[in-house]
Image (cartoon, rainbow, N blue to C red; front, top):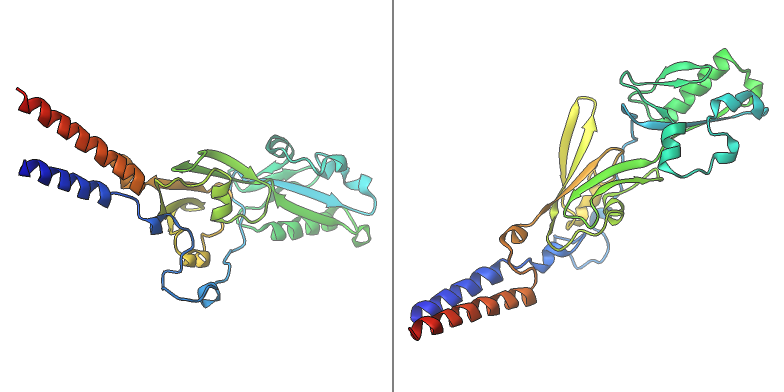
Length: 266
């Protein structure tokens, strides 16, 4: 009987210790135990300008005093500037090829690899003024990414690829658009797989720490892959909360008691 009690106590300790701590489920904690309710050290948002990569899709729009003279440069036409579907952006935008070029009507190939959208605007405007228009035409060029596409895998509500029509998206906004990270997801080690000219790199974010807002990877970039790995509690199959752990303990104790009773009657 003592062995059974020891076994039950051991099982209780294992199950309780495998519960997911409350602190591991809370975002943006001040881990320096400060009593100040404000963000410590005046955390500032950090985001470097995005530089265009291969396979990005750019929306290029050109305006002038005489709009008819630049119609050919606006593939979807002025009446469709508010189109919001990813499919229309794909077919009407300019895709950056493997050489880092886009091909624009009347202008030909323009290398945009590694440039920001603001820099590309100036490049196109200069080329138009040098080759086709006078400064009195008041050429105005806008270049934007055709949506910010990212993919989320692992412990998220709805894994998959999403396109957001915003210029800036932080990691919390991205996760909100693919469903919340469940209790079984590891919020302390969210991985960002990012493409660079020299290859892919993996960066890790601790979403439970308020200092994540200082990270240069706090804002996602086009084609990022977000991976949330599961906590060990999920693979073990133990309770996620105290109530579920208690249920598991009751089940185990009942099973042991039934087994003992059956053997004792033999």
